[in-house]
Every structure is written in structure tokens, then in C-alpha cells.
Amino acid sequence: MTEIPTPVDFIGAPGSPYTRKMRALLRYRGIPYRMIQQGGAADHDLPKPKVGLLPTFFLPDDSGELAAVTDSTPLLRRFEAAFSVRAAVPPDPALAFLDALLEDYGDEWLTKPMFHYRWAYEADIEKAKHVLPLWRAVDTPDAQVDPLRKMFSERQISRLYVVGSNETTAPVIEASYVRFLRLFDAHLSAHPYVLGRRPGAADFAWFGQLTQLAQFDPTPAAVTLAESPRVYAWVDVVEDLSGIEVSDDDWLSRSDIGVLRPFFEEMGRTYVPVMRANAQALQEGNDTVRCEVEGLPWEQQPFPYQAKCLVWLRRDYEALSAADQSVVDGALAGTGCEALFA
Image 1 (cartoon, rainbow, N blue to C red):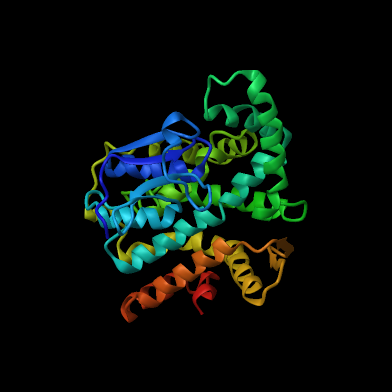
Image 2: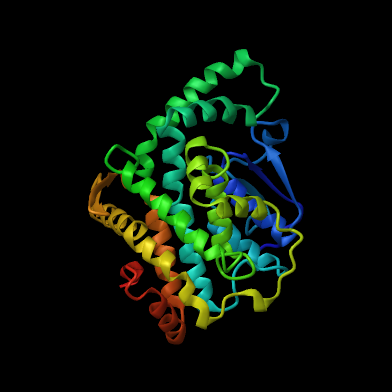
């Protein structure tokens, strides 16, 4: 793979969970970077991605030409291959796979409460529509930004269906967030990070969503503070981990993997049935994803990217040795997550 020059350039925004995920990763790993203002002068001459997503990184392709690259999960692993210092993926293949599964839960499930809370409650809508457009350029005159506020908020509210947020699913989404907070609070009381005493991919994925849920949007921020001041504080800590010292002994050992089981059980209740139903709907050419989550009907439009994520996870599971698969199977047995790989 082509060498990655530094500093790494990317376009991002503070309100993008995946921007925050990758920026915190770069800070922790000590990889020099430049975050370019979206819509700024430096943005105009850069390559454009096929789909305009944030963050957008500008990295050499196989021919050495600069290309626009999105999608935080493959990017995180590309940086793992390119930079050896302070890895965010454990060297143990079984633990690395479980970390990837937890990362996907953050990227593909926790984003549901993030998007839901922001555009389902009036106080959150008001804050988002007044602040988010100014992140592109804080000196934009009100006369220019006011029309953008209305257009932006109406567009985002109209897209709630993408994450499956509606009157039926709202209680499921919100209850799942409260349970997640309680589980994570209990975990953090003994382990400062998901995988022990150093952060992995899951930490950065969960952090990205929590920068919005815990600290920007007023409704979930109030829920977070009420349920877990510890999680709220953790988000502040993970924002910049450039100064922490880590060693390979800081990862959870195989004998300690059981501490992750509560998370896998929660995933088996929510994330797993939706991921499986989404993949099935796409495979069968259905225009609606239908399943049951927590005893309630779940309906949303199929999401091709999430089916791709499941393909990646299944591919990585199949690539494990028989011994490593056995460790993973033991960690997931009875949680519901094993259904993803049956």
C-alpha cells in the first residue's frame, strides 16, 4: 500500500461524530494532521469524494495520486498499517475482532440515538440549526446563514427514516441509550477504556457518537449527566489522549474478555436483529426492513452500507484461525451476537 505522507489532510466538522472519532485517533497515535475547514478556501482545489461524507481524507491512491477517501473504519485500519506507534488495534486477533464488532456497534447503532435525539426534540433542533451552519464559517453574516438554518434542519429531520427513528422506534432507541450508559458506567468504574487500560477502535467509535450525545445535544446530554457523570467525563478525557503512556500489557487478556459480555448482550437485543434484517431485506430486494426489537416492530428503509459492514465482519471472522474463532465464539455465546456469524 502507498505510503501516507504527513501531515494527513482531511475535511471535517465538530458536529460530525466520525470526524471526532478520527481526529481523536490521530491525536492519540501522534500522527500529524491538518483539519481543513469545510467550504473554506483550501477545500476548493481538493479531490471530491464519490459521496460527500465527513470526514473526507486526502490520501495517495495505488498510483500515488491524491484521492478523497471517506469511511472511518477502513481508514482506521489503513493508518494501523501505515504507522506502527501506539496502535489502536490489539495484537491478539481474537481481541481485535471483538474490538471491531464493538466499533461497528458504535458506528452503526449508537448513531441512531445520536441522530434521533438531535432531530426529534424541539430544543435539540433549535440548538443544532443555529450552531451547525456556523461551524463552516463563524463569520458568516446572519442574513446568509438564516436561510441555511431552515433548509438544513428540514433536510435532516426528513432523513430520520435513515436511522429508523419514528414514533414506534423512538422508545426502543432511547431505552437502548440509557442501558448503554449504565453498562458503560459500570465498565469504566474498573477499566478506563473499553479494552482495558489503553484505547482501541471501539473507544474512538463510541467517543465520536458521545461527543454529540453527551456534550452537544441538550436532551441526551441531560440524560447522560443524570445516568452517568463518569461517561460524560470520559468523553472529555478521550478528546485528546496524546499524552497518555501505554504498553502492550494494557490490553485486556483473553481471561478478562468476559467483562465485555454485558455489551454483547445489549448488542444482541438491538444492533443484531436490525443488522440481520437489513442484510436480508437487501438480499431479497425488499424496500423495507422489518424485524422486532425489544418486542416492538422495527421498520426502516434498507441501508446498503450497514450490509457492507456485516460482510466485512463476517469476512474477518472467517479469516480467524480455528483457535481464535473458538475464543470469539466463547465470548459471544448466548449473547445474541453469535447469530451474526452462524
